[in-house]
Image (cartoon, rainbow, N blue to C red):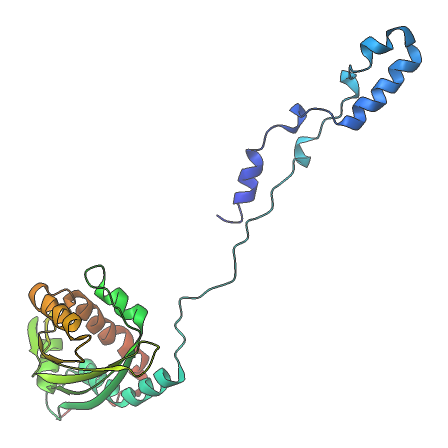
Length: 261
């Protein structure tokens, strides 16, 4: 479409044959008239010769330059060294969870992992949508994930299932770009409902929140709003399904495929 656009603009240009003659053409014709018909030079000096006017062939019509498109950009997110280290540290836990999803084996040890993840400000802004603006920068969060193997395997096997996680704490550093980050702690007990192995609804279910006095009212209002209207439920559903299908596909060749006989 972009490459074809200049040709379309050229087709819309006015016909060059209708353009007025140039000033140099008028001067030459005036001199010729003065040499042959001196008596009428004053009357005919400004009259151009119709047959002497050159026309521009249609195939020589000027074509406008293509628009400047700017530098090449990509939707791929480049991870910082810290984010790469966090991702590598989470890999073992990811493989354990994805192995349960793939094998649907309910027997065995439950999931218990220490998780650390950096949430970028733009990701948090998108997640919160128009209902609640994110006033800080990145958030670096840590928690201990405890997940029942039997519950996860059942959610993959049964046509309808709900995973209700026990209450756990999350600690986050909210960076502002100036001074020390704010340290925030919150309790939550997420609940996710599955249908045929796919998440269809979810809620975070916030508990107690601890934060510096300056920002506590904002967090208290935000978590309360989510508890009452479930603003983040659809985001949780999207993240769970992305992990189940896309993220687990990234490590499919590393899954041990353990089954208990």
